[in-house]
Length: 77
Image 1: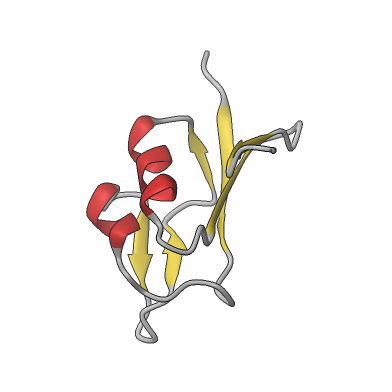
Image 2: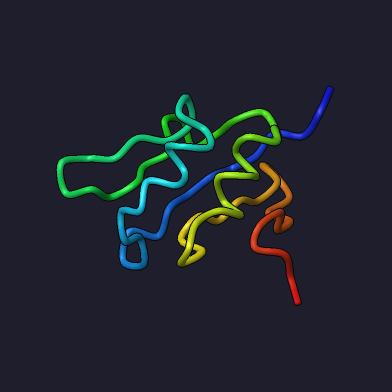
């Protein structure tokens, strides 16, 4: 079984570019204020969610391994 991820969006940083929705439409949606939200904060590790995080122009999406809290994105320096 693969990793499970915890996905969160820092809405104080989110600018509503919708790149996350473009890359992973099943995983993210924008609210009426054009702020991104994960469809489900707990998800199976997958390339589309990672691509969405990587495409965010302000790095508002944070992904950690569920349980351990180990960072997936953004990577630790």
